[in-house]
Length: 67
Image 1 (spheres, rainbow, N blue to C red):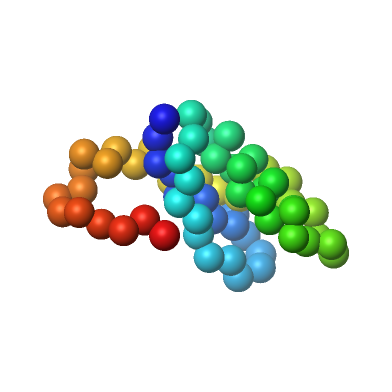
Image 2 (spheres, rainbow, N blue to C red; image 1 turned 30 degrees about the vertical axis):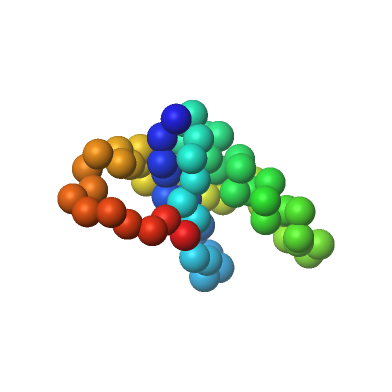
């Protein structure tokens, strides 16, 4: 598993989410599914998101909070 930062690819202002997933596509799907559970007017697709990563936890020089 890897850590990915998932953010909107364009358009609406949208904060990023840090996700633990097997690959980039799964990371985008997890965020889209999570957001779609609470949305009624907008349905998100995986193509609505961009992903950075994977982020290797060993690359952090100090401990950090992932929120």
